[in-house]
Amino acid sequence: MRIPGSDSMLVFSTSDKGGTGRSVTSCNIAYRLCLRGHDVAYVDFDFGSPTAGALFEIGRVERGTTEGLGMHSYLSDVVGEPARLNVDRATDRLDLRRNPPGAGKLVLFPGDEGGAEFGCDDAMVERAAMLLSSLLGEFSVVMVDLSAGRSVALEIALRATVTDMLRQIRHRWLVFHRWTHQHVLAAGGLVHGDHGLIKTGEFWGHDGPRLLASTRCVRTAVPESEHKDEDSADHDDRAPLDVWLDEQAIMLRQLATKHRVGAARVLGQTPIEPMLQWREQLILDVDVDAQLANEATVEAYTNLARRLTNKATWDIE
Ligand SMILES: Nc1ncnc2c1ncn2[C@@H]1O[C@H](COP(=O)(O)OP(=O)(O)OP(=O)(O)O)[C@@H](O)[C@H]1O
Ligand SMILES: [Mg+2]
Image (cartoon, rainbow, N blue to C red; front, top):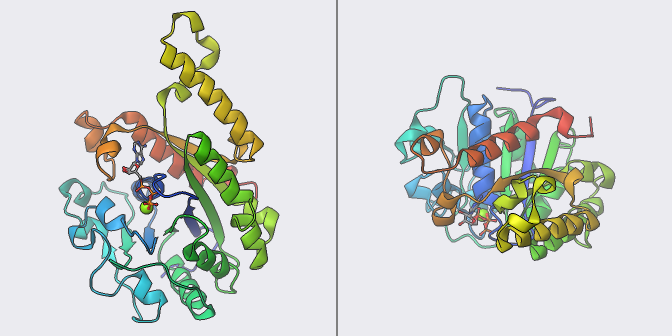
C-alpha cells in the first residue's frame, strides 16, 4: 500500500459543455500515463453519462455497471465497496491486454448505468473523500471524470478536496473545451465566472489563487491550421479556407486571452483525429502503425500526460 503523499496526484476533468472530448481525452491521458509507468485509477463521476467502460472497450460496463456497484451507488451509500475493473484484464480489445514492460496498472471505477444527477450532502462528500484518499494509497494518479457544467459532481469534488483527508494532496483541474468561439467563452465562464470553479471553490473553503494555479485548459480537436507557423504563411498562395482558418485561430487566441483561458492557462491541445470522429476509443500505438490514427494524436496525448505530471508545469510548489 502506498502512503498518499508528495507524488500522488488527483486530477479532475471538467468542462462547461457536454461533448467537449473530456472523457475521450481523459481516458487517453490515463492510458499514456499508465504506459509511462504510473499506476492510474480512472473514476467515473459523470453520473448522467458514464462512458469510460466504452472507451476502455469493456463491453459489460459499456454505459456503466448494471450491477448497482458503480460510483452512483457508492456515493449514495447503497454499497460499501464500488466495482473496480483492471482494464488490461477486463477489456475486449486484445491490443489493450498486452501492456509493454514497465507500464503501470490502469483500473476503472465505473459509474452506474442509468444513474442520474443527484443532490450533494455532507455524507456524500465524506464518502467521496474516503474513496479518493484510499485510492491515492494505491495509485500515483487518480483521474476523476466529472459531469459537465456546474454539476453536483463538481461540487462533490470541490468539497471533498478541502476535507482533512485530501487537503494536503496535490489536485489538478483540467477544463476541456473545443476550439470554437462558444467553447472558449464557456471555458472562461467555467473557470472564472460566478458559480464557476474558482468562485465555487472559494465558497467551499479553497484558496482561490491556489486553485487557479492548479487549473489548466485542454483544447480538443483543434483544426490543423493551428499547428502551422502563421508567420511563414504567404496569404496570396493559400486556399481561402486556410486563410480563413488562420484568421479564426488568431481571433480565438485573442478571445481566449481576454477571457483568461489563454496560452498561460493551457496544458495542451489535441488535433482533430478522424478515428475519434467515428468512434470514441483509446488510440493505441498499433493504430498509428496500421496507419489508422495519426501519430500527432498519440503525441498530443503523451504530451498532455507528461505536462500533467511535470512539476515545472505548475507554479504552485
Ligand atoms: N481529437 C479529437 N478529434 C475528433 N473527435 C474527437 C476528438 N476528441 C474527442 N472527439 C470526439 O468528440 C465526441 C465527444 O467526446 P467525449 O464523449 O469525450 O466528450 P465529453 O465532453 O466527455 O461528452 P459528455 O459531456 O457527453 O460526457 C466523441 O465522439 C469523441 O470521439
Ligand atoms: Mg464524457
